Image (cartoon, rainbow, N blue to C red; front, side, top):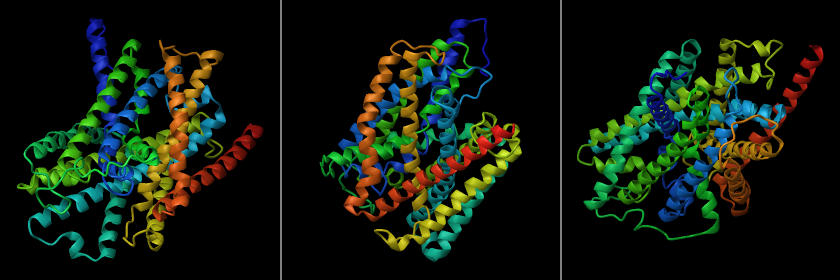
Length: 503
């Protein structure tokens, strides 16, 4: 609950406005800008066919879409009472049905959250070694860790360290959440340091004509000058996917309104927050594009601090801490989601599921997350011969499937907005109706209805037409997720019905 000084309503409103604004900014701006903004498989510039102009247009487009969607979710979230769980599952149960809430719970607990928690641990290690320490040692004229060790040894080292990070956060958050909260709070401020450095540094590099290429050679062209100027129809939808990943999490900002006394500040605070995030992302993207030619934020840091490589290394360490919050945050959320799903009767976890303890929920969370973590690593290594390149990448499946989970999440978002619009006619659920909310909701549905089918076709079907092996593997993994969720749902329904008969 936000602590409010009731003596001064104006100050209270200003305080709550700034609190919601800052928390929304902190929740949304995170690892996505680092993980996806690059000219590599799965990155924004790669999806845009190396056309930065197209990438910028899509950044703006997704920013506008998310801004409108946030308005719809403020109305949806207003249906939750103070003593109720304020989660996507609860919204789904109220506006759609219990069964839909069960499907969403399975999706979040079995895939969405564990995959992002795993990716956080994996990418933390990658940032430190692949982008940080190795580059620093190379700049110092020394052998890198990847050169000193064999490929197998280097991969094993990163897997072990990723495991330590993931398991460490899980155990820590199982026994106490105070350290995790401190880590999350501190890193919320830390993550803006390298972003501000990139924002300023990108423009400085451009205006001082110090752009370098991927190999560090001077007098290079930047992303705009190096643009292919290709405007292919499918590239538009392909570019949406990684950018959506960067905005993922905006929906969680809506849950903040439950603890706010002045409800009127919620909508404008979130509205201004998402617009500010969109502008911030846009400026960062432009800085990356004008300061380099591959859209890689880590290489831009090397360019900015080319004469002082230790500062580049320190910046990447700060980024590693930022990415680690993915693991910390989701290893905290998974047990809570399991508790919520059990208490509300969405998932079956035994006879006394509705009274499931935090400890049991945490143990279930650890088991699920580790199964996902090690399964994705093993599969990534096993399928190496089937890929377009024979490069060993133990994080390949977790990186690609993380994108799958995010685009699947938009089905959830779409369903809830559609239910909200229908609720305006049926009044099935009591909500605080927002002025213009119905119009915005309809616009959201139209926009999502237009681009979502193309995104899913581009991501799930088109790879089998173009015969892109990596994309085909990713699509196959996405279909596997759907199949597993369907099986889990069938089993869950069987036990829930049996439990209902016995009670």
